[in-house]
Amino acid sequence: MISKKTVVIGAGAAGMMAAGAAAENGASVTLLEKNPRVGRKLMITGKGRCNILNNCDIPAFISNVPVNGRFLYSALNNFSPSDAYGFFESIGVPLKTERGNRCYPQSDKAVDVVDALRRYVLDSGVKIVTDTARSLELEDGVIAGVKGDKQTYFADSVIICCGGKSYPLTGSTGDGYALAEQAGHTVTELKPSLVPVESDDPDCKSMQGLSLRNVALKIIDNQTQKPVYTDFGEMLFTHFGMSGPMILSASSHIREIVPRRYTASIDLKPALDFSQLDRRLQKDFSENCNRDVSNSFSKLLPRKIIVPVLKRWGVPFDKKCNAVTREERRALCEILKNFTVPVSGFRPIEEAIVTSGGVKTSEINPKTMESRFVEGLYFAGEVIDVDAYTGGFNLQIAWSTGRLAGEKAQA
View 1 (cartoon, rainbow, N blue to C red):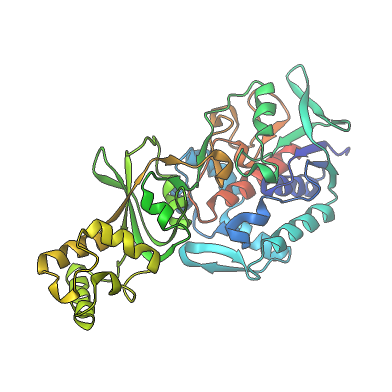
View 2: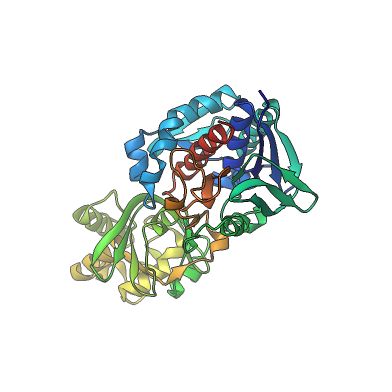
């Protein structure tokens, strides 16, 4: 039996999985990558630790994919999170599970994941070529190959795994969308997802660099006065607004963003209810009874947030602690339990972890990842219009769609 020739465009998460799967199934595979090293974007995921997957069941997984989750059923049933867990351990990446079923390499090093995938691809017989794909070679609605800068790569099947437009320095510059459009595909509106948010509140700039841990967050839609997202964990103030794990997750729940439509409400003391916090303030003010209120918060709050809290409280900075009234103390409790920051917009798509939007899912066969327009053309990973919340879900989409595309491209 003559093996099929398969070209995979993009040596990221989806591309390496697709290339390895196609080769394991007998294809002669060429993996095109514009960067001199594979897995550039993988190297920076999870702050360099690589949140490799989320070890949950398929219904729970789909519930964490707000955009076109049902499209992924076949891919996930073919290669589930538990399958991915076993796969990575089998190629020499022992894993561990942390809060929220998030899985990481035991070494906490993304480079170990990249190196293992590269070994897996090469051991499967894949040829990795440094070249940039410029256009598809098509003959009567059938794929014939890929034209690169260096040469044309003739093939029976082509898998587009170029990623999105986020983090362009890693090579994700939207090349896959242009190739898809050349084949007649629709690319939906591209927007940032899992991205820091901007705020026009000057307090953010004054608190730049402040990381809050163990705080509770709500994102309130001011039109409905209802929360669109709630979480507990870590966030960061920046010169432009807010970032950090909770904010990145929250961004994927914010759909139509316009200035002042959404407000972040931060509970700075979620472990204490209102009455417990009031008693804590009484204790602190009693211990500092003859001091100015501005000098009495060092045990209660991080230094950088003290002045913003005092400004919102409205009590003179030099007021003595023993002169604070019950009403003033309760007003302070309100601020500490509901420290609000208006959200004015998203940071640019280049700073997003994930690109929302991509090749329209109705134009791709979900059981094979093959184009409904061009025979032999497949898609996998972020180039498809599916995106999930943070926590390992987006990488699992890459593993599952890449695996399925690789297997079917050789079938």
